[in-house]
Length: 90
Image (tube, rainbow, N blue to C red; front, top):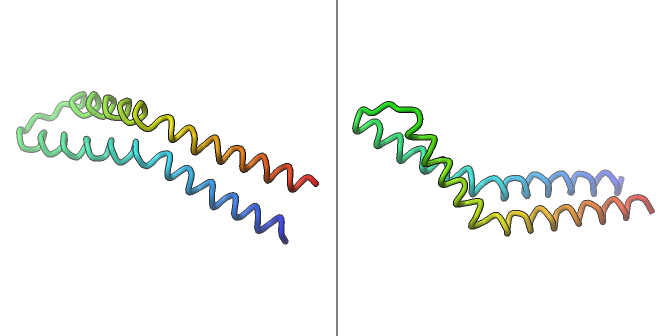
């Protein structure tokens, strides 16, 4: 029963870490897509590449700025997983 609770706790933490790592990139891409979409609707310019290039640039910028903290969060979670595996094996 204790193993089941720790496994569910680990799964819950995994979902939170995934959300925290993915959220900055997704929110920045969503915001840029919305702004470009509004500009395209206002100017009646319907070009697919006009949305792709700014999203790509913003995604790269977010990864450069926040990549180290994202990697640190994933690294800490990985250490926690391996510690749980070691504790379960005993």
